[in-house]
Image (tube, rainbow, N blue to C red; front, side, top):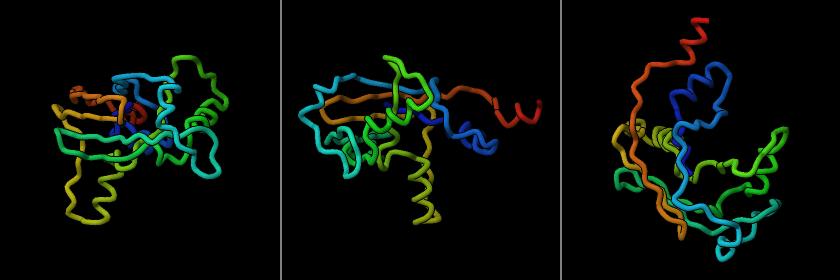
Length: 165
């Protein structure tokens, strides 16, 4: 799953003390396969100490325009999916078919990578997705998801909406 975070919108939400909290259903991509728990059994590993649920040893990688930008493992997650679902369901009705993301793979978020890069080197060239970029994400034995970024021409702003109301 790639949530393709809308950082400009999230930054505006944060200035209004609104977020970033909402998923953006206009750009989340899922695939290429959905699997059941029994299909993941060969990759199962123990949850981290003091956590409940299951974890899996599955390498996850990401490339942008054939340049690797992320390399992590599902087994490195602190919280298990059982714990994430427990928290997500608090005060909320969850239904079959609802999709719950686990958060970003370590080294998989440009906001964090850019921040760390700038801390280590003030001349670090920030990286953001641009129109035409091809993003490929792969998880061991589950396949590769490939998407091309398409920009929507808009100047809509939640800050401008707030100022005009």
